[in-house]
Amino acid sequence: MNQKLQQAQFALEQLKAQRGNTYYPDFHLAPPAGWMNDPNGLIYFDGLYHAFYQHHPMSADWGPMHWGHATSHDMIHWQHQPIALAPGNDYDRDGCFSGCAVNDNGILSLIYTGHVWLKEAGDDSAIREVQCLATSTDGIYFEKQGIVLTPPDGIMHFRDPKIWQENGTWWMVLGARDAANCGQTLLYKGNSLREWQLDRILAHADVDGGYMWECPDFFPCGDHHYLMFSPQGIQQNTGYQYRNRFQSGVIQGHWQQGSAFIQNQKFTELDNGHDFYAPQSFTAADGRRVIMAWMDMWESAMPSKQEGWAGCLTLPRELFERDGHLCQRPVIEAKSLRQQSQPIEPHSVSQTEVLLDHSSAIELELVWDISQSNAERYGIALGNKVGDGLELYIDSQSQRLVLWRHYPEYELDGYRSIPLPASDKLSLRIFIDRSSVEVFVNDGDAAMSSRIYPQPNERKLMLFASHGSAVISEGMLWQLK
Ligand code: FRU
Image 1 (cartoon, rainbow, N blue to C red):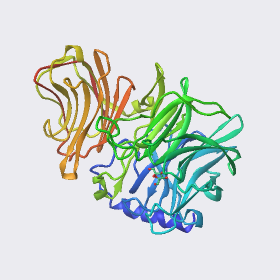
Image 2: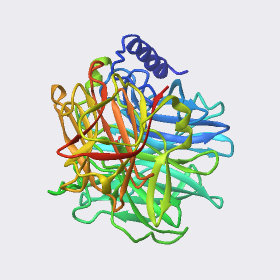
Image 3: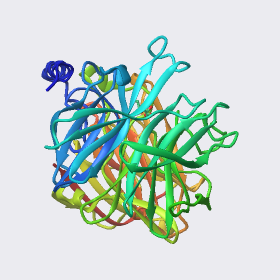
Image 4: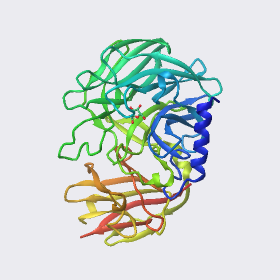
C-alpha cells in the first residue's frame, strides 16, 4: 500500500473508533466513518459484487476524494475493504472523482476522473479534469496507470466516465459542460481502455436543461436505451417537479453503435423523494440491470456528521420495463434481510393505531384499498405521534401520495409527492432504516427515497386516518437484519 493510502486508512480507523451509531444504517451501505457520496465502479467481478464510492476518510465533510470499497456476495450484505484510491499524483492531486469499473480481460480496471483545482480549492471556474486508469490483479489493491483521456478544446468540466464493451468495442459516456454552460453527455469509442476517440455529443441540454450533466450512464433495458444522468441547474418550477437541489433521471430512446441517440421522451426523474443522486447501473450475476444511488442531496443538512460519518447508498434496485415505462424494485436478494414477520389483517383504520413501539430496521408491505377509503388523509407515521417526524400518506383531495418529513431540530422539513396511480388499490413496499425511508409504489411504478432522523425514542410506527376511514386489504411487517 502506498503512503497516501496508508495515511488515509489510518485516519479512517481513528474516525471509526469514535463513530456514533444512532443514525448509522443497519442494512444500507455507508462508509466505515467519514464522508461518502456517489457510488462508483459498481461491478460483478469474479464471483463477487464490488461497490466503490466517493469517500473522504479524514472527516465527515466532503474533501479530497478517495475511493472507498466494499464487497458482497448478494449486493445486500457488504464487507468493507481497504480504501482503493487516494489522490496525490499530479493529475489527480485534488481528488479521484467518480467513475466506473470494468473487467478488461480478467483485470479489474477502474476509470475515474483526476481532479485538480487550478486556483483556490473549491473554485469551480478553474479546474483540470482528465480520465485516469487504475488496475488490480487481486480485486483489492490498485495500481494507478495514469491519464487515458484529456478534454477536448474549450471544455473544462469533464468527468464521471462510465464504460461498457459491446462486440469487442469499448464505449464511454462522460459528463461535460460546454462553453455556453450547458450540460452534455459525450460519447467516446475505444480500441482499448487507453485509446479513445470522440464519437459524438450523445445528448445535450436545452436552455432549461441544466449547466452540467454529472454521472451519465447509458444502457439498454426492455425495448429501449436509457441515458441516465444527474443534471445540475435545472430550475425548480412552481409545481411538484424538480424540488431537490439537483436531479437524477433518464431520457428514454433508441440507440445502436455508430448512430445517434434517438430520444422519444423528455428527461424524467427516477425517484421522487428528497435524497437520491448520482445513480449508477451495473449488470448483476444473472444479467439484471441494477442501480444504486447516493441517498443524500448536495447542500442538505446531514445530522449524522455529528456522529463522524455522512452518506449512504440506496438499496440496489432492479430496473425493468412495464408497458414501455421504466420501473424499479429492490433486488430480490433484499428478502434475505427479513426476520420475524407480523401480519397486518385486512381492516378499516379510522384512528391512530400503533403497529410497533420501536422500529429501527423494518420492511412494510401495505395495500390500501383507495376505492373503499374516504378519509381525507391516511397512511403511516414514524415518530412519537402523528404529525411529528415522518408521514407517508394518501391525500384524497389532491389525489397524491405524500412523503413528509419534519425534523426541525435539523432544519429538515417538507414534503415530496407523486400522483396516485389510476387504480383502486395502492400497494406500497416501504423500507425503514435508522436514517432513511425508501418507498416503492405499485411494484416499481415509482420510488421515493428520503433521509430521516428520528431519535431512538421517536420510532413508533403507526397507521392513521383522519376525517374518515381507510381500508387496508393486505399487510405484512418484517423486522430486518
Ligand atoms: C456528483 C459529483 C461528480 C464528481 C463527484 C465528486 O455528485 O459532483 O460529478 O465526480 O461528485 O465527489
